[in-house]
Length: 385
Ligand SMILES: [Zn+2]
Image 1 (cartoon, helix red, strand yellow):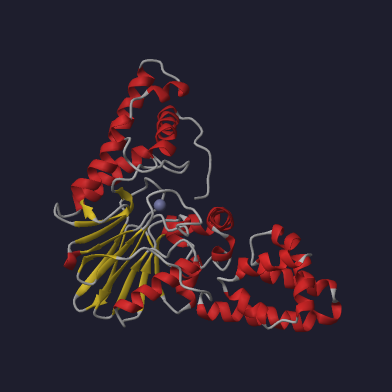
Image 2: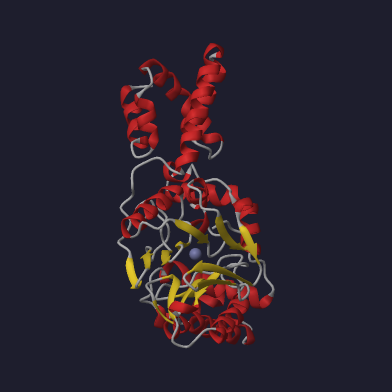
């Protein structure tokens, strides 16, 4: 283990609590611990810092008790704070209306540069406290978003709902649970999907966004209040938040939030603005079309929309960009099938009218193939997004 390797390690942990914790350790222990880090880290996606200590303690019997106590201490500190580290420079929040703000996430895929924040994170200020929509893709983003809220209001976060089972909606939830938010909500199916897929979802997001900011995420789905189709929250001052589910689509389970007093709707991933849609193995486009129409029918025509992806907008825009695209592509795929076309013929469908939309290149071919399989009973596969 060279000095260079150790200093690389130091810089890797600089932006979490690890550096602060490491600073109090004798250098000899640090060197020994470093040697055992890589193998322990490879074993799973638990905290590699603590895993390294655990492995070191195992090899050095006399130190076991003190190292164990140290591990417990670090773990408890993180649990109480939800996240210990520096605030990430998230995009500035967009004011949608008085007391309603949303951080519009990156319109591309999740990367280390966007910290996994490629959907929208929003908050609404009410008489009795703050309602947060989406937990964030990891505890670091959740913490940073919370600091942003605190600069706008001194009301505490009292309610939180996640749009679906995906990592960017849900992996930050342990932060909010740790800081004492008691009213956590999810559609039942989405909550079960997250619980069942937790290890894979976390591993996937940690690999693509960053281990250091993801590793403290825990499965807190047992702390969530589940609902099936509708749950009304009294948020004080005569206002309510209606949590709604209109059926499967982008994900099998989803949570939308409608606030009648503000004429405001969070569509979650039922609605997109500008960004290309991405069909995952668990996406059912036919159901999504029905779900979108049910949502549209239940909402006022002039409702203000905060979509799952893209800037705040109106229903006509998300209908054009979401429902319009799905109906177009499904009809085109069906035409090819009717003419005897096979999977490889889907690439000849002209989708160029949607070319300007972010991630078009990465999604449009797969979307057509997905629809081909959906319409012909093919195997859609599995994935953990
Ligand atoms: Zn999403």
